[in-house]
Structures are given as C-alpha cells and as structure tokens.
Length: 249
Image (cartoon, rainbow, N blue to C red; front, side, top):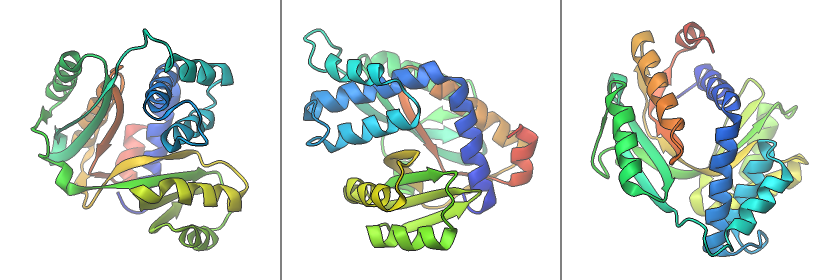
C-alpha cells in the first residue's frame, strides 16, 4: 500500500493483534522454538533465533516465556514443526500469501483452505501468487522522534534499500540476506529496539479495495490469523484512509 493509508492499515492490524495477545505469544514461542532447534539455542550464533527473540521482546513477551521456548527446542519430545507457504486469492482480486508452522500439514491445509473459502477467497497452487511479491527484510520503528529525512539517511547508511515513513512509523526494507546487519546497525544508531524485524513478502503492485471488499478481506485475514498453524499473512491490497475509517481503524 502507498501513502497515509498504508500506515493506518499497519495500526489497524496491530490493534487486532494486540487483542489476541495470548495467541500472538503462542506463535512467537513456536518461532523461537523452531529457530533454536534449527540453528542452536545461542542467539549470538543463530541469527534467526536472535530476530525471533527480539520480536518477542518488542511484543512485551515475558522473559520466562522466551526461556521456556528456547529450552523446549532441546526437549526430546518437542513437536517437529514444518514450514509451509500457502498461496491464494482474496476478495477484490487480491493475492494472499500465508506462512505456517505446523506439526500436521493436513490439518493446516484444511483449516487454511476453509478460511479462504468461507470468506470470499480460494486457495491456489504453490507459486500462483508469490511471483507478485518480493521476499525482503522489514524493520519497523514506531513512535520515534526521528524525522523522516533523518531516518531515511540512517537507514541507507545502514544498508537498507527503501524507507517509508508516516504517523511516527518508519518502515525500512532491505535485501533478505542483509536483515540482521541492517537491523543491528539501526538499533545502534537509534538507541532503541525496533518494534518488528522480520522477513516479509512485499507486494510489487497493489489492488485498491472498496468498502465491501475490504470488509470481507479483513474478515478473511482475521480468520487466517486465528489459526494456530498460521504465523503470518501477506497481501497486495491497498485500502484508502476513508475506507479504513469506515472499518473502524
């Protein structure tokens, strides 16, 4: 999305996630466990784990929860999670990517397909929409006193490719392989932790939605995000400020 509406949408999604805090902690814990299991329990030598812990802290996840999630990776009876990407189409002709971590791929596929179908969408084959997105790093700073121009300079100096700022929110994008380096450099120069640091699917072009399509799409995204197996949902939608206000953002 572009312009002011993009950041209104970020805050709308953030508000929805805050209302589902317990579910969010569960998803963050799962990512920490998987990251530690794949690359070891030491965040200093495991970039994925370091980012997972940083994101958990930015969401005010208790330290004990983080420690338990790391310890769980070393337990012999811990679940074996599989990373699966699903792709499909949402209301208004939108393209949707769903990232999941699941210990039961049949359950995940069935639940995700149902969430699409019940909300005006349909799940497609692998690769059906991902060509419309770029897989990049994303770093978000919220409620920052740094000016837009200053943030732009800092981000580029840190190795970022693009910066978009509005409403005291700064979204920085970089090559996926540079995410840890750019995040570390920005954390140092900003003197604070970013609100979010992760790999995302960024749409190359967006589809503008009217109120009816936007309402249906938000309902579909909520249904997908409510699933335990779903970690992240991405789309190529653009929602105007006027429509966002009618949605109650």
